[in-house]
Amino acid sequence: MLRITEIKLPVENAQSLTHQADEIKAALLKRLEIPESDLIHFDIFKRGVDARKSHAILYVYSLDVEVKNEAKILAKFRKDAHIKPAPDTEYKYVAQNTSTNKPRPVVVGFGPAGIFAALILAQSGFRPIVLERGKAVRERTKDTWGLWRKNKLNPESNVQFGEGGAGTFSDGKLYSQIKDPKHYGRKVIQEFVKAGAPEEIMYVSHPHIGTFRLVGMVEEMRKTIIKLGGEIRFESRVDDIEITKHEDGQDQVQAVTLQTGERIATNHLVLAVGHSARDTFEMIYKRGIYVEAKPFSIGFRIEHPQSLIDRARYGKSYSEDLLTKLGAADYKLVHHAKNGRSVYSFCMCPGGTVVAAASEPNRVVTNGMSQYSRNERNANAGIVVGITPEVDYPGHPLAGMELQRKLEGHAFILGGSNYNAPGQLIGDFLANRPSTKFGEVTPSYTPGVNLTNLDSALPEFAITAMREAIPEFAKQVKGFDLADGVLTGVETRTSSPIRIKRDDASLQSISTKGLYPCGEGAGYAGGILSAGVDGIKVAEAVALSICAQQA
View (cartoon, one colour):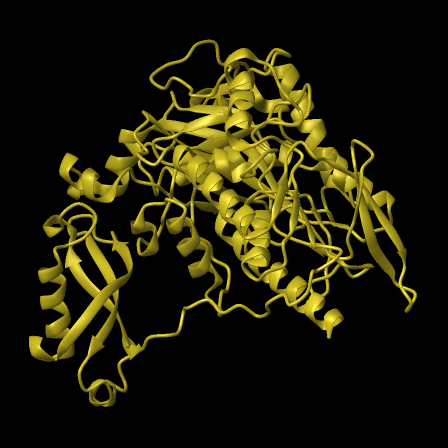
């Protein structure tokens, strides 16, 4: 099998998401300089977009190809970096359970990291027990709408907590910049497709699923885990971890205790609680499990008309026909401010909405979400500023978490103390004057937006850096500084404020044997795909440890 990259064809000739097979085949035969009779089969491995020339946008294909005389072709193109043997991307299980496996491994949290940890363990015969503090995804959706429509927060069932994790109410982005030499990301994508995701996510360069599709997929993956012997328990918050001394003197996990008082014995505990499980962070810190503060970012959500972003990004090639092929345009922006702070766009949601993402009473948090169609009127993204424990919240492992709480509590007050969010028009923000009425852009955040001055919503250094960055971003995306655009506060859950540090080899906590910190909440992922990949890695480590104990 060969991997052929950089096959470029004009987007204008494409039929919807890809070109016709005959057109791709013709380009492939020309590239390899072979007759059609020598081509056995080809598949699209990846399809990206080259939009550097707005008047001539291209689809860029990577193809997996079966040919006759493969060795001859490789020899002919031995100096060509775009014609190489295709790597083996098939997932290979590292262990299979051979015993009754008591006590069973326990996975705490059923977001992307917990789902894939449980799925791999179940597929390997280890019958995991999953403990999720929130509700099943459809019940959880009703609770989430309770905040969005009725200003009523359920602290145990919301955008952050429940089946599917925070990623369920998002754009469903499935791309990441992590290094993935074992192709675990491919396994994640394949399992999503099996669970009902569109097959195109296997090859598009920036795949996304959308919230409504994610709901059904999560349910299918839950059914698979249960069918393979796993057990999934909702509304089962872990309030304590029982730890004893191992024979070598190191702490060892023995059991977990639920909010009901029930004790579940385990010596393999996967902690995949997400970036907002603050009570869990406090509990593990009190238990002496090693945690440390880590960098994250804070900022606002920014909204523009999606049509403005489309025209700015597609330039001279912009047309309704182009939109049907490429979809709503996105952007990725970075600016290094004069005060030394980095400002960047985060979790950009084309054709999406800004959502209420609070998980604690009397606090306001924003996030972004899109459906698969990405056809809402506004584009939104986080515009955030990087902060670090060394400079901005020194002295305590949980200080970043407390900073988040402080900012979210103040946003609640600025918004009117009713879960409305504070907002300001971009033009007024840049001029440092309160906003009094909306203009061209109607904000999408529900329950609602209370216009004010956001000057006090973030630390002064962040406000200064953002006021400098937005006009600079307008040089890359024309109209980004649109006076009637809307900023909504605050965005504080960009990533976990802590890291539950683990050993690089065993993936166990450096302080506590049998505890496997996992995913975004533990500080080892940032998004659906990377969290799923981390879940796979941790599941493999657990499986190998159990098998070693059985030997």
